[in-house]
Figure 1 (tube, one colour):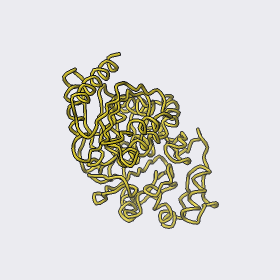
Figure 2: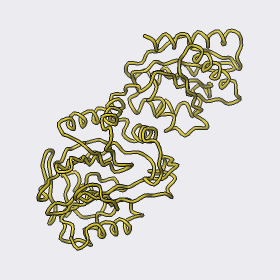
Figure 3: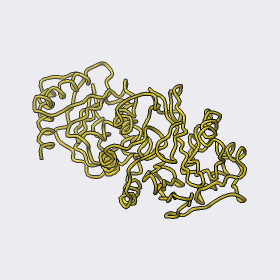
Figure 4: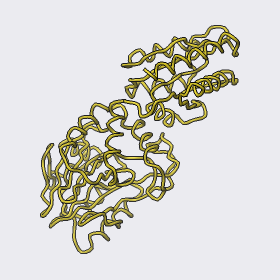
Length: 388
């Protein structure tokens, strides 16, 4: 519970126990489930929190409002980590109206068997909710990253309530650099929907925003141009940094030796290189790094006439998220029938604006003079491509 500005309060909760978000995404430092109260003459509560924290959240709301009663609960996003306690809220505050769009109320009925026909306020894109002395303007953001998602803008505090946009992994009680876990959150969850994020950013450019209040992660108020700029890059699939991510899988260590040699050759040429072991590193960390850098090298063994399983999963994750605008190099290893490079290239054929550089390095079991020459040639080709 925190006073953000005049009539604007934070009533969210930290989850420091969770280790897997959405049952699949590792979170080392927990999660924040954010909720806000905006008060003029009337008060609106913006979103609820995860089901496990309903009692704490309702306590925060009650302490913040004191003797006042909420007039509205605004449902910006129906994913259960934000909507799970809407039903209990409406039971405790039977006079409060529920604000959402048509798709919101379809989902409320699906989750709770209640469509609030007698107390709902249905809003459309661009509508405003008058709170007396301030208003909330609704800016729809479909498929960022669910179809019912809305954001809203408080004209008094010039605050944007951005739903899952601009969110990050990590509890608020843990102090860490925003970019790394925000990048991982974006590409793990929102990354497929870059076109929809671009549409939202275009709408938001019409507003004077001084504060971004997401549903996960810290409130952003300083240097907003930096955060907006990163979101523009991410949703355009533009790299943040010139450099090479070398993503690899290795079984007996020979492919890893080739990766180490390549990174060393790249650094000799003044090119930043970062390794990512797909067997030892959880995939979302590797995905985030793939979208961070301007080039990628995929290095793997041939396995059952295909890519090694972790590489196959990784490449699938990239293509699902519209991987594009990158320089790509390939390294394959195979004792009797190297086939991984052909399989990787085939998987990436549907991606736009990829520039494949040669040679494709072929290792037969272990490095030899020929494959070492190919690695040096690949390093030279990557360095030249990044300079152009």
